Length: 589
Image (cartoon, rainbow, N blue to C red; front, top):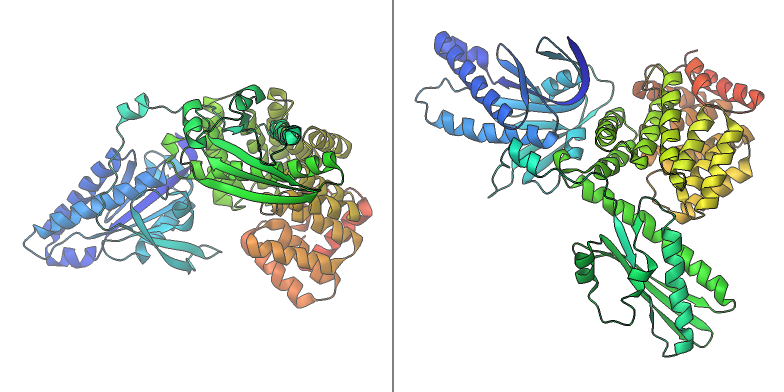
Protein backbone atom coordinates (compact mmCIF):
# COMPACT_ATOMS: atom_id res chain seq x y z
CA UNK A 1 0.00 0.00 0.00
CA UNK A 2 1.32 3.48 -0.95
CA UNK A 3 0.79 6.58 1.23
CA UNK A 4 1.74 10.16 0.36
CA UNK A 5 1.93 12.75 3.13
CA UNK A 6 3.82 15.68 4.62
CA UNK A 7 6.24 14.70 7.38
CA UNK A 8 9.34 15.64 9.33
CA UNK A 9 12.14 13.39 8.05
CA UNK A 10 15.28 12.34 9.90
CA UNK A 11 18.35 10.89 8.19
CA UNK A 12 21.28 9.59 10.24
CA UNK A 13 24.51 7.82 9.39
CA UNK A 14 27.63 6.60 11.14
CA UNK A 15 30.66 8.79 10.50
CA UNK A 16 33.55 6.99 8.80
CA UNK A 17 31.84 3.61 8.73
CA UNK A 18 34.25 2.33 6.04
CA UNK A 19 37.20 3.09 8.29
CA UNK A 20 35.53 1.29 11.20
CA UNK A 21 34.92 -1.79 9.04
CA UNK A 22 38.59 -1.87 8.04
CA UNK A 23 39.58 -1.93 11.71
CA UNK A 24 37.38 -4.94 12.53
CA UNK A 25 34.62 -5.85 10.11
CA UNK A 26 32.61 -8.06 12.47
CA UNK A 27 32.82 -5.71 15.45
CA UNK A 28 32.04 -2.65 13.30
CA UNK A 29 28.90 -4.23 11.85
CA UNK A 30 27.72 -5.27 15.30
CA UNK A 31 28.21 -1.78 16.71
CA UNK A 32 26.55 -0.06 13.73
CA UNK A 33 23.57 -2.40 14.10
CA UNK A 34 23.50 -1.68 17.83
CA UNK A 35 23.68 2.09 17.43
CA UNK A 36 20.71 2.08 15.07
CA UNK A 37 18.78 -0.31 17.30
CA UNK A 38 19.24 2.09 20.23
CA UNK A 39 18.41 5.11 18.07
CA UNK A 40 15.27 3.39 16.76
CA UNK A 41 14.10 2.83 20.34
CA UNK A 42 14.66 6.51 21.14
CA UNK A 43 12.81 7.51 17.98
CA UNK A 44 9.86 5.33 18.95
CA UNK A 45 9.72 6.78 22.45
CA UNK A 46 9.33 10.27 20.94
CA UNK A 47 6.46 9.22 18.70
CA UNK A 48 8.56 8.72 15.55
CA UNK A 49 8.77 5.78 13.17
CA UNK A 50 12.14 4.29 12.19
CA UNK A 51 11.25 3.16 8.68
CA UNK A 52 14.43 1.49 7.52
CA UNK A 53 18.13 1.02 7.99
CA UNK A 54 20.20 1.31 4.81
CA UNK A 55 23.62 -0.12 5.64
CA UNK A 56 25.21 2.64 7.68
CA UNK A 57 22.20 4.99 7.51
CA UNK A 58 18.75 5.22 9.14
CA UNK A 59 15.58 7.00 7.93
CA UNK A 60 12.79 7.99 10.33
CA UNK A 61 9.59 9.97 10.19
CA UNK A 62 7.95 12.28 12.76
CA UNK A 63 4.77 14.35 12.78
CA UNK A 64 6.36 17.11 14.91
CA UNK A 65 9.70 18.86 14.44
CA UNK A 66 10.12 19.24 18.20
CA UNK A 67 9.91 15.44 18.66
CA UNK A 68 12.48 14.81 15.91
CA UNK A 69 14.95 17.29 17.41
CA UNK A 70 14.36 16.11 20.98
CA UNK A 71 14.89 12.47 19.98
CA UNK A 72 18.08 13.37 18.11
CA UNK A 73 19.61 15.34 20.98
CA UNK A 74 18.59 12.69 23.53
CA UNK A 75 20.21 9.99 21.44
CA UNK A 76 23.40 11.96 20.74
CA UNK A 77 23.84 12.55 24.46
CA UNK A 78 23.24 8.86 25.26
CA UNK A 79 25.47 7.66 22.43
CA UNK A 80 28.32 9.91 23.53
CA UNK A 81 28.15 8.38 27.02
CA UNK A 82 27.94 4.89 25.49
CA UNK A 83 31.09 5.44 23.41
CA UNK A 84 33.05 6.69 26.41
CA UNK A 85 32.68 3.20 27.91
CA UNK A 86 34.20 1.48 24.87
CA UNK A 87 37.87 0.56 25.21
CA UNK A 88 38.84 0.51 21.51
CA UNK A 89 38.63 2.95 18.58
CA UNK A 90 35.61 1.38 16.88
CA UNK A 91 33.28 4.18 17.94
CA UNK A 92 29.93 4.54 16.10
CA UNK A 93 29.57 8.36 16.04
CA UNK A 94 26.35 9.51 14.38
CA UNK A 95 25.46 12.70 12.55
CA UNK A 96 21.84 13.67 11.87
CA UNK A 97 19.91 15.81 9.37
CA UNK A 98 16.25 16.80 9.76
CA UNK A 99 14.05 18.26 7.00
CA UNK A 100 10.39 18.68 6.18
CA UNK A 101 8.65 17.61 2.99
CA UNK A 102 6.21 15.35 1.20
CA UNK A 103 7.08 11.67 1.19
CA UNK A 104 5.75 8.42 -0.22
CA UNK A 105 5.55 5.51 2.21
CA UNK A 106 5.29 2.00 0.75
CA UNK A 107 6.24 -1.33 2.31
CA UNK A 108 7.93 0.47 5.23
CA UNK A 109 10.16 2.34 2.76
CA UNK A 110 9.99 6.12 2.73
CA UNK A 111 11.05 8.15 -0.32
CA UNK A 112 10.70 11.72 -1.49
CA UNK A 113 12.37 15.11 -1.64
CA UNK A 114 12.28 15.49 2.15
CA UNK A 115 14.37 12.35 2.64
CA UNK A 116 16.96 13.55 0.13
CA UNK A 117 17.20 16.96 1.80
CA UNK A 118 17.55 15.38 5.26
CA UNK A 119 20.39 13.24 3.90
CA UNK A 120 22.13 16.28 2.39
CA UNK A 121 21.89 18.14 5.72
CA UNK A 122 23.22 15.13 7.61
CA UNK A 123 26.25 15.02 5.30
CA UNK A 124 27.00 18.66 6.19
CA UNK A 125 26.67 18.11 9.95
CA UNK A 126 29.62 17.73 12.29
CA UNK A 127 30.27 14.27 13.80
CA UNK A 128 27.86 13.91 16.71
CA UNK A 129 25.90 16.94 15.44
CA UNK A 130 22.37 17.72 14.31
CA UNK A 131 21.54 20.00 11.34
CA UNK A 132 17.99 21.10 10.51
CA UNK A 133 16.30 22.83 7.59
CA UNK A 134 15.07 26.41 8.07
CA UNK A 135 11.43 25.28 7.76
CA UNK A 136 12.00 22.88 10.67
CA UNK A 137 13.59 25.67 12.72
CA UNK A 138 10.55 27.90 12.04
CA UNK A 139 8.17 25.33 13.55
CA UNK A 140 10.20 24.69 16.72
CA UNK A 141 8.54 26.24 19.78
CA UNK A 142 10.97 28.85 21.08
CA UNK A 143 10.30 27.81 24.69
CA UNK A 144 12.21 24.54 24.18
CA UNK A 145 15.80 24.41 25.53
CA UNK A 146 17.54 24.33 22.14
CA UNK A 147 20.43 26.45 20.93
CA UNK A 148 20.09 26.99 17.19
CA UNK A 149 23.11 28.26 15.30
CA UNK A 150 22.40 29.91 11.96
CA UNK A 151 24.69 28.24 9.41
CA UNK A 152 23.25 30.41 6.63
CA UNK A 153 21.94 29.52 3.19
CA UNK A 154 23.75 26.75 1.31
CA UNK A 155 23.44 25.49 -2.23
CA UNK A 156 22.31 21.87 -1.96
CA UNK A 157 22.84 19.36 -4.76
CA UNK A 158 19.56 18.52 -6.47
CA UNK A 159 17.72 21.59 -5.14
CA UNK A 160 17.20 24.71 -7.25
CA UNK A 161 17.09 27.14 -4.31
CA UNK A 162 19.61 27.59 -1.48
CA UNK A 163 18.51 26.00 1.79
CA UNK A 164 18.61 27.82 5.12
CA UNK A 165 20.37 25.58 7.68
CA UNK A 166 20.68 25.59 11.47
CA UNK A 167 22.74 23.50 13.87
CA UNK A 168 20.94 22.41 17.04
CA UNK A 169 22.41 21.68 20.46
CA UNK A 170 21.03 21.48 23.96
CA UNK A 171 21.20 24.76 25.85
CA UNK A 172 23.84 24.72 28.57
CA UNK A 173 22.51 23.48 31.90
CA UNK A 174 19.21 22.28 30.39
CA UNK A 175 17.78 18.80 29.94
CA UNK A 176 16.39 17.29 26.76
CA UNK A 177 12.56 17.40 26.78
CA UNK A 178 11.13 14.04 27.82
CA UNK A 179 8.82 12.08 25.50
CA UNK A 180 5.10 12.69 26.00
CA UNK A 181 3.29 9.61 27.22
CA UNK A 182 0.23 8.54 25.27
CA UNK A 183 -1.89 8.54 28.42
CA UNK A 184 -0.95 12.11 29.32
CA UNK A 185 -1.85 13.23 25.80
CA UNK A 186 -5.25 11.59 26.07
CA UNK A 187 -5.94 13.12 29.49
CA UNK A 188 -4.99 16.62 28.39
CA UNK A 189 -6.69 16.96 25.05
CA UNK A 190 -7.09 20.69 24.41
CA UNK A 191 -10.47 22.32 23.97
CA UNK A 192 -11.36 22.44 20.32
CA UNK A 193 -12.74 25.77 19.14
CA UNK A 194 -12.22 28.34 21.89
CA UNK A 195 -11.53 31.71 20.28
CA UNK A 196 -9.67 34.52 22.03
CA UNK A 197 -11.87 36.68 24.23
CA UNK A 198 -11.49 40.41 24.79
CA UNK A 199 -13.16 42.74 27.27
CA UNK A 200 -13.39 46.48 26.67
CA UNK A 201 -13.59 48.10 30.09
CA UNK A 202 -15.30 51.51 30.39
CA UNK A 203 -12.92 54.31 29.51
CA UNK A 204 -12.32 56.50 32.54
CA UNK A 205 -13.55 60.09 32.41
CA UNK A 206 -10.55 62.10 33.63
CA UNK A 207 -12.08 65.51 32.85
CA UNK A 208 -13.66 66.12 36.25
CA UNK A 209 -16.84 66.99 34.38
CA UNK A 210 -19.71 64.52 34.85
CA UNK A 211 -21.29 65.81 31.65
CA UNK A 212 -18.39 64.32 29.68
CA UNK A 213 -19.28 60.86 30.92
CA UNK A 214 -21.38 60.27 27.81
CA UNK A 215 -18.32 60.81 25.62
CA UNK A 216 -16.13 58.24 27.42
CA UNK A 217 -19.02 55.75 27.61
CA UNK A 218 -19.83 56.35 23.95
CA UNK A 219 -16.30 55.54 22.84
CA UNK A 220 -16.32 52.34 24.92
CA UNK A 221 -19.64 51.20 23.47
CA UNK A 222 -18.57 52.00 19.91
CA UNK A 223 -15.37 50.00 20.33
CA UNK A 224 -17.31 47.00 21.66
CA UNK A 225 -19.67 47.17 18.67
CA UNK A 226 -16.88 47.57 16.10
CA UNK A 227 -14.73 44.78 17.55
CA UNK A 228 -17.71 42.42 17.49
CA UNK A 229 -17.55 42.52 13.68
CA UNK A 230 -14.25 40.64 13.89
CA UNK A 231 -15.60 37.12 14.23
CA UNK A 232 -12.20 35.78 15.21
CA UNK A 233 -12.72 37.51 18.58
CA UNK A 234 -15.20 36.72 21.33
CA UNK A 235 -16.10 40.20 22.61
CA UNK A 236 -17.43 40.29 26.16
CA UNK A 237 -20.89 41.83 26.30
CA UNK A 238 -21.34 45.48 27.28
CA UNK A 239 -23.29 44.67 30.45
CA UNK A 240 -20.43 42.57 31.81
CA UNK A 241 -17.77 45.15 30.93
CA UNK A 242 -19.77 48.06 32.36
CA UNK A 243 -20.38 46.22 35.64
CA UNK A 244 -16.79 47.25 36.51
CA UNK A 245 -17.41 50.95 35.83
CA UNK A 246 -16.11 53.30 38.53
CA UNK A 247 -14.43 50.42 40.35
CA UNK A 248 -10.75 50.28 41.23
CA UNK A 249 -9.77 47.04 39.50
CA UNK A 250 -6.65 45.14 38.54
CA UNK A 251 -7.22 44.30 34.91
CA UNK A 252 -4.98 41.21 34.92
CA UNK A 253 -6.80 39.87 37.98
CA UNK A 254 -10.24 40.41 36.42
CA UNK A 255 -9.06 38.71 33.22
CA UNK A 256 -8.02 35.64 35.17
CA UNK A 257 -11.29 35.55 37.12
CA UNK A 258 -13.39 35.83 33.95
CA UNK A 259 -11.03 33.70 31.79
CA UNK A 260 -10.51 36.61 29.38
CA UNK A 261 -7.48 36.52 27.08
CA UNK A 262 -7.21 40.26 26.36
CA UNK A 263 -8.43 43.51 27.84
CA UNK A 264 -8.69 47.03 26.46
CA UNK A 265 -8.82 49.95 28.85
CA UNK A 266 -8.34 53.67 28.50
CA UNK A 267 -9.15 57.17 29.61
CA UNK A 268 -10.64 60.39 28.25
CA UNK A 269 -9.49 63.85 29.30
CA UNK A 270 -11.17 67.00 27.92
CA UNK A 271 -9.73 70.49 28.33
CA UNK A 272 -11.38 73.36 26.53
CA UNK A 273 -11.91 72.39 22.91
CA UNK A 274 -9.30 69.60 23.02
CA UNK A 275 -9.69 65.97 24.01
CA UNK A 276 -7.02 63.37 24.77
CA UNK A 277 -7.89 59.68 24.65
CA UNK A 278 -5.45 56.98 25.74
CA UNK A 279 -5.93 53.27 25.15
CA UNK A 280 -3.93 50.17 25.99
CA UNK A 281 -4.30 46.51 25.07
CA UNK A 282 -3.30 44.05 27.80
CA UNK A 283 -2.51 40.33 27.68
CA UNK A 284 -4.85 38.79 30.24
CA UNK A 285 -2.50 35.91 31.07
CA UNK A 286 0.66 37.88 31.73
CA UNK A 287 -0.67 41.36 32.41
CA UNK A 288 1.83 42.79 29.91
CA UNK A 289 1.00 45.58 27.48
CA UNK A 290 0.69 44.54 23.84
CA UNK A 291 -0.13 47.99 22.49
CA UNK A 292 -0.76 51.51 23.74
CA UNK A 293 -1.55 54.78 22.00
CA UNK A 294 -2.60 58.38 22.70
CA UNK A 295 -5.00 60.39 20.53
CA UNK A 296 -5.19 64.20 20.73
CA UNK A 297 -8.01 65.86 18.80
CA UNK A 298 -9.86 69.18 18.44
CA UNK A 299 -13.53 68.88 19.35
CA UNK A 300 -14.99 70.69 16.34
CA UNK A 301 -17.52 67.89 15.83
CA UNK A 302 -17.69 65.67 18.88
CA UNK A 303 -19.40 62.76 17.10
CA UNK A 304 -16.95 62.85 14.22
CA UNK A 305 -14.07 62.81 16.70
CA UNK A 306 -15.69 59.91 18.56
CA UNK A 307 -15.97 57.90 15.31
CA UNK A 308 -12.41 58.73 14.27
CA UNK A 309 -10.89 57.70 17.58
CA UNK A 310 -13.01 54.54 17.74
CA UNK A 311 -11.90 53.49 14.25
CA UNK A 312 -8.26 54.24 15.06
CA UNK A 313 -8.37 52.09 18.18
CA UNK A 314 -10.25 49.22 16.56
CA UNK A 315 -8.01 49.05 13.49
CA UNK A 316 -5.00 48.84 15.81
CA UNK A 317 -6.40 46.45 18.41
CA UNK A 318 -7.96 43.74 16.20
CA UNK A 319 -4.82 42.92 14.14
CA UNK A 320 -2.57 43.05 17.20
CA UNK A 321 -4.85 40.71 19.12
CA UNK A 322 -4.85 38.19 16.27
CA UNK A 323 -1.07 38.56 15.87
CA UNK A 324 -0.72 37.79 19.57
CA UNK A 325 -2.85 34.68 19.01
CA UNK A 326 -0.56 33.55 16.20
CA UNK A 327 2.46 34.03 18.47
CA UNK A 328 0.72 32.15 21.27
CA UNK A 329 -0.04 29.23 18.94
CA UNK A 330 3.50 29.27 17.56
CA UNK A 331 4.90 28.81 21.05
CA UNK A 332 3.16 25.46 21.54
CA UNK A 333 3.87 22.00 20.20
CA UNK A 334 1.41 20.73 17.59
CA UNK A 335 0.03 18.20 20.04
CA UNK A 336 -0.92 20.99 22.45
CA UNK A 337 -2.81 23.05 19.87
CA UNK A 338 -6.57 23.45 19.91
CA UNK A 339 -8.40 23.52 16.58
CA UNK A 340 -8.51 27.31 16.78
CA UNK A 341 -4.79 27.48 17.43
CA UNK A 342 -4.15 25.16 14.49
CA UNK A 343 -5.93 27.70 12.30
CA UNK A 344 -3.79 30.49 13.76
CA UNK A 345 -0.60 28.47 13.16
CA UNK A 346 -1.78 27.63 9.62
CA UNK A 347 -2.31 31.32 8.85
CA UNK A 348 1.27 32.01 9.86
CA UNK A 349 2.50 29.37 7.43
CA UNK A 350 0.15 30.48 4.62
CA UNK A 351 1.55 34.00 4.76
CA UNK A 352 5.12 32.74 4.36
CA UNK A 353 4.28 31.97 0.71
CA UNK A 354 6.57 28.95 0.38
CA UNK A 355 5.54 25.52 -0.83
CA UNK A 356 6.69 23.75 2.34
CA UNK A 357 4.87 26.24 4.59
CA UNK A 358 1.71 25.91 2.53
CA UNK A 359 1.85 22.11 2.85
CA UNK A 360 2.23 22.42 6.61
CA UNK A 361 -0.78 24.75 6.66
CA UNK A 362 -2.84 22.20 4.71
CA UNK A 363 -2.02 19.53 7.30
CA UNK A 364 -2.89 21.80 10.24
CA UNK A 365 -6.18 22.82 8.66
CA UNK A 366 -7.13 19.25 7.82
CA UNK A 367 -6.56 18.38 11.49
CA UNK A 368 -8.56 21.41 12.68
CA UNK A 369 -11.51 20.54 10.44
CA UNK A 370 -11.40 16.87 11.40
CA UNK A 371 -11.71 17.72 15.10
CA UNK A 372 -13.98 20.79 14.70
CA UNK A 373 -16.02 20.45 11.49
CA UNK A 374 -18.12 23.55 12.30
CA UNK A 375 -15.21 25.97 12.75
CA UNK A 376 -15.84 28.54 9.97
CA UNK A 377 -12.38 30.13 10.18
CA UNK A 378 -10.73 26.79 9.37
CA UNK A 379 -12.55 26.61 6.04
CA UNK A 380 -11.73 30.26 5.28
CA UNK A 381 -8.03 29.56 5.86
CA UNK A 382 -8.28 26.36 3.81
CA UNK A 383 -9.62 28.40 0.87
CA UNK A 384 -6.68 30.82 1.20
CA UNK A 385 -4.27 27.90 1.33
CA UNK A 386 -5.69 26.45 -1.88
CA UNK A 387 -5.50 29.81 -3.67
CA UNK A 388 -1.84 29.97 -2.65
CA UNK A 389 -1.38 26.66 -4.50
CA UNK A 390 -2.97 28.21 -7.59
CA UNK A 391 -1.11 31.53 -7.42
CA UNK A 392 2.31 29.86 -7.21
CA UNK A 393 1.40 26.93 -9.52
CA UNK A 394 2.28 24.45 -6.78
CA UNK A 395 -0.36 22.15 -8.25
CA UNK A 396 -0.90 21.16 -11.86
CA UNK A 397 -4.66 20.76 -11.37
CA UNK A 398 -5.36 24.43 -10.69
CA UNK A 399 -8.97 24.08 -11.86
CA UNK A 400 -9.56 21.45 -9.20
CA UNK A 401 -7.86 23.61 -6.57
CA UNK A 402 -10.12 26.57 -7.40
CA UNK A 403 -13.24 24.38 -7.12
CA UNK A 404 -11.99 23.07 -3.77
CA UNK A 405 -11.30 26.64 -2.61
CA UNK A 406 -14.83 27.67 -3.61
CA UNK A 407 -16.27 24.73 -1.67
CA UNK A 408 -14.24 25.64 1.41
CA UNK A 409 -15.08 29.36 1.27
CA UNK A 410 -18.80 28.70 0.74
CA UNK A 411 -18.75 26.26 3.64
CA UNK A 412 -17.19 28.97 5.84
CA UNK A 413 -19.87 31.51 4.88
CA UNK A 414 -22.67 28.99 5.42
CA UNK A 415 -21.35 28.29 8.92
CA UNK A 416 -21.02 32.00 9.80
CA UNK A 417 -22.76 34.41 7.39
CA UNK A 418 -21.73 37.35 9.61
CA UNK A 419 -17.99 36.70 9.29
CA UNK A 420 -16.76 39.58 7.13
CA UNK A 421 -13.38 37.97 6.51
CA UNK A 422 -15.06 34.77 5.32
CA UNK A 423 -17.17 36.82 2.90
CA UNK A 424 -14.07 38.66 1.67
CA UNK A 425 -12.15 35.43 1.05
CA UNK A 426 -15.13 33.95 -0.81
CA UNK A 427 -15.12 37.12 -2.94
CA UNK A 428 -11.44 36.58 -3.63
CA UNK A 429 -11.91 32.94 -4.64
CA UNK A 430 -14.79 33.91 -6.95
CA UNK A 431 -12.38 36.32 -8.61
CA UNK A 432 -9.96 33.47 -9.36
CA UNK A 433 -12.95 31.56 -10.73
CA UNK A 434 -13.61 34.57 -13.02
CA UNK A 435 -17.03 35.18 -11.51
CA UNK A 436 -16.33 38.89 -11.41
CA UNK A 437 -19.70 40.31 -10.43
CA UNK A 438 -20.33 37.75 -7.69
CA UNK A 439 -16.80 38.44 -6.45
CA UNK A 440 -17.46 42.17 -6.13
CA UNK A 441 -20.78 41.56 -4.39
CA UNK A 442 -19.19 39.43 -1.64
CA UNK A 443 -16.32 41.88 -1.17
CA UNK A 444 -18.81 44.74 -0.80
CA UNK A 445 -20.87 42.69 1.65
CA UNK A 446 -17.74 42.15 3.73
CA UNK A 447 -16.99 45.88 3.80
CA UNK A 448 -20.57 46.76 4.70
CA UNK A 449 -20.43 44.29 7.57
CA UNK A 450 -17.00 45.40 8.82
CA UNK A 451 -15.74 48.75 7.45
CA UNK A 452 -12.51 48.26 9.43
CA UNK A 453 -11.46 44.99 7.79
CA UNK A 454 -8.13 45.61 6.07
CA UNK A 455 -8.15 42.32 4.17
CA UNK A 456 -11.46 43.18 2.49
CA UNK A 457 -9.99 46.44 1.17
CA UNK A 458 -6.82 44.64 0.10
CA UNK A 459 -8.73 41.97 -1.80
CA UNK A 460 -10.89 44.69 -3.34
CA UNK A 461 -7.63 46.24 -4.59
CA UNK A 462 -6.96 42.94 -6.37
CA UNK A 463 -10.49 42.96 -7.84
CA UNK A 464 -10.06 46.47 -9.21
CA UNK A 465 -6.59 45.50 -10.38
CA UNK A 466 -7.60 42.63 -12.67
CA UNK A 467 -10.58 44.67 -13.85
CA UNK A 468 -8.27 47.50 -14.93
CA UNK A 469 -9.49 50.11 -12.42
CA UNK A 470 -6.10 51.64 -11.60
CA UNK A 471 -7.14 54.56 -9.38
CA UNK A 472 -9.68 52.49 -7.42
CA UNK A 473 -7.16 49.70 -6.94
CA UNK A 474 -4.62 52.16 -5.52
CA UNK A 475 -7.30 53.71 -3.31
CA UNK A 476 -8.37 50.34 -1.89
CA UNK A 477 -4.77 49.18 -1.34
CA UNK A 478 -3.90 52.46 0.41
CA UNK A 479 -6.91 52.07 2.71
CA UNK A 480 -5.93 48.48 3.56
CA UNK A 481 -2.38 49.56 4.42
CA UNK A 482 -3.66 52.54 6.40
CA UNK A 483 -5.74 50.20 8.56
CA UNK A 484 -3.08 47.48 8.91
CA UNK A 485 0.34 48.58 7.58
CA UNK A 486 2.18 45.41 8.69
CA UNK A 487 -0.58 42.94 7.82
CA UNK A 488 0.74 39.53 6.79
CA UNK A 489 -1.83 39.40 3.94
CA UNK A 490 -0.43 42.46 2.20
CA UNK A 491 1.49 40.58 -0.57
CA UNK A 492 -1.84 39.86 -2.28
CA UNK A 493 -2.85 43.50 -1.91
CA UNK A 494 0.38 44.66 -3.54
CA UNK A 495 -0.03 42.10 -6.31
CA UNK A 496 -3.51 43.46 -7.06
CA UNK A 497 -2.16 46.98 -7.22
CA UNK A 498 0.70 45.76 -9.43
CA UNK A 499 -1.55 44.17 -12.04
CA UNK A 500 -3.65 47.36 -12.06
CA UNK A 501 -0.52 49.41 -12.76
CA UNK A 502 0.51 46.99 -15.52
CA UNK A 503 -2.85 47.17 -17.28
CA UNK A 504 -2.71 50.98 -16.93
CA UNK A 505 0.71 50.95 -18.59
CA UNK A 506 2.58 52.37 -15.59
CA UNK A 507 5.40 49.82 -15.77
CA UNK A 508 7.74 51.83 -13.55
CA UNK A 509 5.18 51.65 -10.76
CA UNK A 510 4.87 47.89 -11.29
CA UNK A 511 8.64 47.55 -10.92
CA UNK A 512 8.58 49.60 -7.72
CA UNK A 513 5.78 47.48 -6.24
CA UNK A 514 7.34 44.15 -7.28
CA UNK A 515 10.78 45.02 -5.93
CA UNK A 516 9.24 46.04 -2.61
CA UNK A 517 7.27 42.80 -2.51
CA UNK A 518 10.29 40.63 -3.24
CA UNK A 519 12.33 42.30 -0.49
CA UNK A 520 9.82 41.00 2.05
CA UNK A 521 8.73 37.81 0.24
CA UNK A 522 11.59 36.57 -1.95
CA UNK A 523 9.59 33.73 -3.53
CA UNK A 524 6.29 35.50 -4.24
CA UNK A 525 5.08 34.39 -7.67
CA UNK A 526 3.11 37.41 -8.85
CA UNK A 527 5.97 39.79 -8.11
CA UNK A 528 8.36 37.83 -10.36
CA UNK A 529 5.83 37.69 -13.17
CA UNK A 530 4.91 41.36 -12.98
CA UNK A 531 8.54 42.46 -12.67
CA UNK A 532 9.72 40.38 -15.64
CA UNK A 533 6.85 41.49 -17.88
CA UNK A 534 7.32 45.17 -16.99
CA UNK A 535 11.06 45.09 -17.67
CA UNK A 536 10.29 43.50 -21.05
CA UNK A 537 7.66 46.10 -21.96
CA UNK A 538 10.19 48.86 -21.15
CA UNK A 539 12.81 47.21 -23.35
CA UNK A 540 15.10 46.27 -20.47
CA UNK A 541 15.67 42.84 -21.92
CA UNK A 542 18.61 41.72 -19.78
CA UNK A 543 16.75 42.48 -16.55
CA UNK A 544 13.62 40.83 -17.93
CA UNK A 545 15.50 37.63 -18.81
CA UNK A 546 17.30 37.59 -15.43
CA UNK A 547 13.99 37.97 -13.57
CA UNK A 548 12.39 35.20 -15.63
CA UNK A 549 15.33 32.97 -14.76
CA UNK A 550 14.71 33.64 -11.06
CA UNK A 551 11.01 32.95 -11.58
CA UNK A 552 11.73 29.59 -13.18
CA UNK A 553 14.17 28.69 -10.39
CA UNK A 554 11.34 29.17 -7.89
CA UNK A 555 8.60 27.71 -10.11
CA UNK A 556 10.14 25.47 -12.81
CA UNK A 557 6.71 24.57 -14.21
CA UNK A 558 5.70 28.17 -15.03
CA UNK A 559 4.58 28.82 -18.62
CA UNK A 560 2.64 31.54 -20.43
CA UNK A 561 -0.21 29.07 -20.93
CA UNK A 562 -0.44 28.34 -17.20
CA UNK A 563 -0.33 32.03 -16.31
CA UNK A 564 -3.11 32.67 -18.86
CA UNK A 565 -5.12 30.01 -17.11
CA UNK A 566 -4.67 31.23 -13.53
CA UNK A 567 -4.44 35.06 -13.60
CA UNK A 568 -8.00 36.36 -14.12
CA UNK A 569 -7.48 39.61 -16.09
CA UNK A 570 -11.00 40.61 -17.10
CA UNK A 571 -10.42 42.50 -20.36
CA UNK A 572 -9.19 40.24 -23.17
CA UNK A 573 -6.98 42.87 -24.81
CA UNK A 574 -5.36 43.71 -21.46
CA UNK A 575 -4.91 40.01 -20.78
CA UNK A 576 -3.07 39.52 -24.06
CA UNK A 577 -0.80 42.51 -23.36
CA UNK A 578 0.01 41.00 -19.94
CA UNK A 579 0.92 37.66 -21.52
CA UNK A 580 2.91 39.38 -24.30
CA UNK A 581 5.12 40.95 -21.63
CA UNK A 582 5.85 37.49 -20.21
CA UNK A 583 6.67 36.14 -23.67
CA UNK A 584 9.07 39.01 -24.32
CA UNK A 585 10.67 38.30 -20.94
CA UNK A 586 11.44 34.74 -22.06
CA UNK A 587 8.80 32.73 -20.20
CA UNK A 588 8.21 29.47 -22.11
CA UNK A 589 4.93 29.23 -23.97
